[in-house]
Image 1: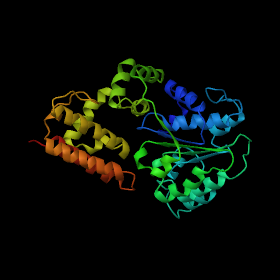
Image 2 (image 1 turned 90 degrees about the vertical axis):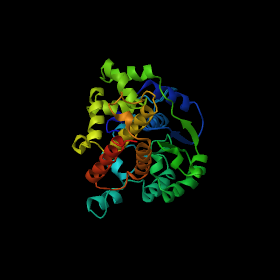
Image 3 (image 1 turned 60 degrees about the horizontal axis):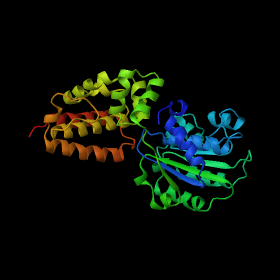
Image 4 (image 1 turned 135 degrees about the vertical axis):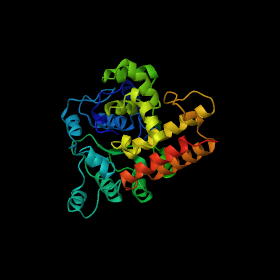
Length: 337
């Protein structure tokens, strides 16, 4: 979730899914799918509608005191659970205890959803609604709950006290405990049509000549495409990305996060493998020399990237990790049979 994602104009496919889900009954929803499809935005739209003072069949009014309180992160009946690093990044308040511990440097902000925060959420669900329209607990990304945190939620998720709704959103549903998944109504995020995604991107300021290629490099995921555009990564620069990897130029990626780098490396690896097989690339244009890398080198690189993805949220030194990842890419892309 980018810093501005929750402030972007709502995409039509999110509005459609919001209206569909509001017509259904249930106290716990699990929204799942790959990144860039709007899980967090859809979860927030549901929370807004459930708590809105003037909600219609299509969602929240966006004007009432309740909607305003959610937008400024002060609603007494909404509990948002995210990793502390994400909460701080996006301006959501931590509990007084957690904030004090971090301010006093007793510990660093957690990259997981802590069990203490979940216990606070369970206690929150047992209170009386402050505004009289029930309460909402929103968890994102739900896969950032460890087993202890998830187990702290189970009983309340199965037998919620009073008028409380839960909405869990995830980009890695397979990482959730089966017991969590079984207690929620599942909703697979809808993939928008390419033409609708391109129109939405162009409405956000992306040039028509860039919208299609950007969407392709993002694997058809419009939020990820817009993130790339807002970071200044226009399509014309992607050949520079490929050549920087072939040459092992770490400095090219100095402003990239580890997540962005790993995502891009997996796409490059995929395209190199399909080009090696004689098929057209999916994400990038044909990279000079990319398709001649050896199968053995590319397969080893693919396995290494999958291992890295499972552990990339650990507190590694970002600079050293970038060096290692770019070195892996250079070795694989320059390998020959």
